[in-house]
Every structure is written in C-alpha cells, then in structure tokens.
Amino acid sequence: MSDKNHFETEAIRTQTETSQFSEHSVPLYLTSGFVFDDAEEMRASFAEEKQRDLYSRYSNPNVNEFIDKVCKMEGAESGFAFASGMAAVFSTFATLLNAGDHVLSCSSVFGATHGLFTKYLPKWNIECSYFNINEVETVESLIQPNTKFIYAETPTNPGVDVLDLELLSAICKKHNLLLVVDNCFATPYLQNPIKYGADLVIHSATKLMDGQGRVLGGVTVGKKELIREIYLFSRLTGPAMSAFNAWVLSKSLETLAVRVEKHCENALKIAAFLENHPKVNWVKYPFLKSHPKYDIAKKQMRLGGNIIAFEVKGGIDGGRKFFDNIKLCSLSANLGDTRTIVTHPASTTHAKVEAEVKAAVGITDGAVRISVGLEHVDDIIKDLDQALNHAE
Image (cartoon, rainbow, N blue to C red; front, side, top):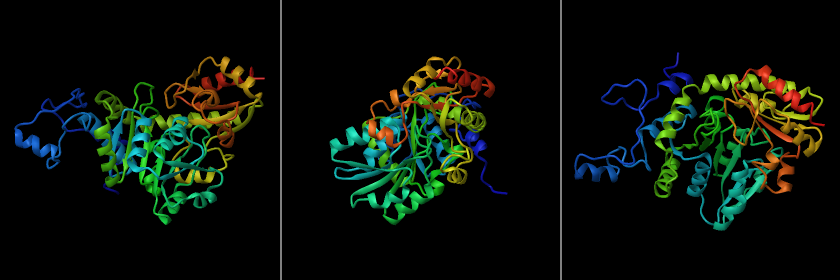
C-alpha cells in the first residue's frame, strides 16, 4: 500500500499549524501584518533567509493552508493564491510574458480571458493566436519563434469541449514551450493536468472549490521556479487572496470530493435526459458517448464534471422562452454552486466576444450552459423539461 494519503484525507488533514489554544478547526488570521522579535529577525525575514509570514499581501496562514491543499491535490511543487480567478489568469500571463511574445491558445476560452488576449495584451505588443479545438493537428503550424506558451481550458468554457493534455504537452516539449492549463471546470478531484505534462495549472476557486457561491478566489500552482516569479510579480502588484476567503475555501476543499461526485452523478443523468428531449438540437457532456472527445475525457478525467452545454430549438426566441419559464434553477452567470444555474453565454459571459469567434466555438443564440447543482436530480429535470416545453 502507498504511503501517500488519498485525495479526501489530504483535503481534510492538510492544515496550518495549531496555535497555543490547540484548536481543532483552523482559526481566522485577520491581520494585515506580523510582528518580529528584534531587528535581526526582521532583517533576515525580509531578506528571505528566514521563512515566515511578513505581510498578508505576500502570505498569510489561512492563504498558505489553502495553497498547500491545492498543491497536494494537483501534485504541484508550489502555488500562489489570488483575489479571483481572473486575477490568477492575468498575473500568470503578466509574469510569463514580455513585449514581443506570442501566446497560442485553444479557441474556446472564458470570455474575460478572451478579452485579455484581444484587448489588453496587444497594448503591450503581445500577440495571441487561436487553434481550433477540433483541429489539434494544426497546433504546430501556428507556433511562432516568439511563442512563449500554449494555453488551454479543458473542459472548455462554455462549449464543454475536451482537449488531449498529453498531446499538447508533447507539442510543448518538442518546441520548448510552457503548457498552462485552466482546470476550473474539472477541479483537482477530476483531473490533474500536471500528471499529463502541464507546467502551470490555474483555477477559479470561486466555482466548485467554494461550491456555494459565497466568495471569490483564484490560484495558480505548478513548477516551483515559475511560481517564484509569479509570487514576486504579485507581491508588488497586490492581487492576493484575503485571509477570510482563504479560510472559507480551505473548509470547502474538505468536502470537494463528495460534492463533486454528486454533481457529476446528477449531471450525467440530466445530460442523458436532454439528449433525448425533442426540443433540444444537441448536447455536449464529456461522459456522454456522443461527445466527440469521449475517449479522451475518459482517459484524463475521473468523472464528467457538472457543466453541460446544449442548444434549445427555436434559436434566440426559443432560448428566451426557455429562460423566462425556468422556475427552480437560477438564472446567473456563475457556476459550480450547490444550486443549479442556467446561463445564456451569447448574451452574458461571452456577450463581448466577436460574432465570428462565438460561431467558431459553437456559442449559438440558442446555446445554454447548465451548472448542475446538488438538488434532487428529478426536481432539476422537471424544471428543465417544463421550460423546454415552452421553448418553441
């Protein structure tokens, strides 16, 4: 038997050291700064000759615990936690990239990430190209002499497409590039990109890591030398996670495995229901056999996740009628909540994405993204069914 503890045990038992009060549950460390015994300790600490907390913009016991948990879950050497998922994405990009660099990304990415690629990175003379998620064989032809890394989401947001991480890693190694993976939809419980060759893994902890729609957070984990540079950038620019949010997220990670198991169980049943519904044109869910990358999903994911994409018949009018008739599920742009959420990407999360880009990644007027929650599956299906029956 392996000496290494199982995922659930590490999630629960990885904690910051106990204080003089011998508490069982880790307390909140709501402090901006930390004190030193004397001038020499203060000097040595800021010179990094002594490892300890200096200031909560740099590190904090609650934030350290959260990072440690995620690192163990992902099999990463080190990490840094941020105020939001997008703070993690931007800070990682800003650390790795210089003026004149090029990024190669999968075409289906979160709308805000697309905005960084198209609106802000070009301001600093950083170029981004997209490769078609269904034509991975074209990736190598798009690599330029100044390409710094390949960026991928899998499953993608909101198309729920699946990319072969092993293949992308092999391409990166061949061309001496980094592989950066957004693992938000899968969580560390379902998928570990580092196992398949990723150098850095990013999460929006706001989603399934929190799991109850309460706090914002983000984290990047991976190779120690890369995280060191991300830490130095973030220490100066200040996107750090708050102690309170880290405390909430650390407690949430203790139940991540059991929650995600149920999310996935519900999602698979709902995906099968939608696939057979007369008011639905198509359904995409990684663990449906009809998913074009089903075999890859089965290889690199434990279960299929809690996100389903499908298209309502009747186009934008059908979609509007569907959303207007939802009763139980929530209309929101968030995901990964205990409560089931239905989202219309074309008018919300991806509203500012160019029409041709949306079309290329399957974001049609009738496309719906469901974040399946933990309600009884029969009640979720009943609500979706009655709303779909109003769609045309």
